[in-house]
Structure formats: C-alpha cells, structure tokens
Image (spheres, one colour):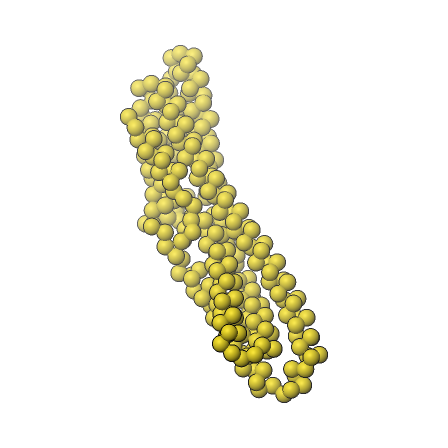
Length: 257
C-alpha cells in the first residue's frame, strides 16, 4: 500500500504555513505602518514588484510540474514495457519446449523478485539490488545455454536473447531514471518567494474573514501543486507512484505451467 513520504508532507506543510503567515503578517503590518507607506504610489510599486515574483514563481512551478509528470510517465512506460517483455520471453521459452523449463523457472524467480523490489514497502528503493541482478544473470545464462535442435528452436532462441537484452536495458533504465525531485534548497527558495508574494497581497487587503479564508484556500491550492511536484518527481515511491498492475499481470501470465 502506498504511503505518503513524510519529508514531502513536511515540505508541503512548511509551504502552506509560510504562505498563510506571509498573508497574515501583511494584513497586520498594514495596520501598523504609517499612512504614506500605503499610498497609491506605494501600492503600485509593491504590486509591480510582486508581479515579477509571481511571474517567476508561476513559470518555475509549471516547469517543475511538467518535468515531474514526464519522469512519472517515463517510469510508468518502462514498467509496462518490462512487463510486456517478460510475458513475451515466457511465451518464447514455452514455445521452445521442455528444454527451456530451467530458463522459465529463472524468469519467474526474477519477475517475482523484481516486483518486490519495485513495489514492496520492505524492498522498495533497491532497484540495483544484488539478488535481483544475480537472478537476471542466471536467466541470461540459462537462455544462452539452450542448444537448438531445429530451425524453429534456433529462431526462438535468437528471439529470446533479444528480449532478454531488452529486459536488461529496462532494468538499468529504472535504476538510472529515478525521477526529477527538485533539490530541497531550491524548494525552500521558492517557499520564500511565496511568502513574499502573500505578504504583499496582505498589505493592501482588508482584514476580514472572507479575505483570510481566500488566502488560506489559495495557499492550499499552491501547496497541492508543490506536493504533486514532489510526489510525481519520485515515481517509484510515495503516495503517487507508478502502478504495479502490469507487472502483477505478467506474474500471473508467466506463472502458468
């Protein structure tokens, strides 16, 4: 069962608190500042400055969300391709004949361990696990050890080697492309920008329940975007993660005798 990464949750809460605090500080500071600090000229200057930060923050949030979504989509596609190749490899080995039973056993062992490695809470995060790598090497050795006795078996063996090579490629892609989670320092700089934006909004807003509620809801919306960026950027873990259903279906298919 997927769980929320506590660090992502804390960062999102920190962003929400910073935005609400900025708005409240602006609202109450406006009641303490001398009148000339809140003149129309001052308001225009502050709003222009805030507009620059708003534009920058909006652009950065959009780019980060796009990059995180791309990372999620890429990893999801790799898992689906891996699942498809495992099913195809099992079909080729089954068609080869009883001589490939040993290779099929190694394939089932590898697929089961790979699923645990990617989607089991106890094993998740060890995409370069030694045990899984050893099982994949055993699968390769068993495919290489096939001795075709007919043109049909020769063709099946060659196809099996090609698909096995694809499985190796997908393993390393999952290991290398772990996501695009932004550096924490950058996230905190963006939270500072959001604090300044909401503080500037509060300076020239009336102090009433509707305004405070509006600021809180706006802060909640932006917090949701930050949380989505963090979650999608780490696609193999957390609350929003790549689905393991394709690999589950592959395990069912290759488990058939």
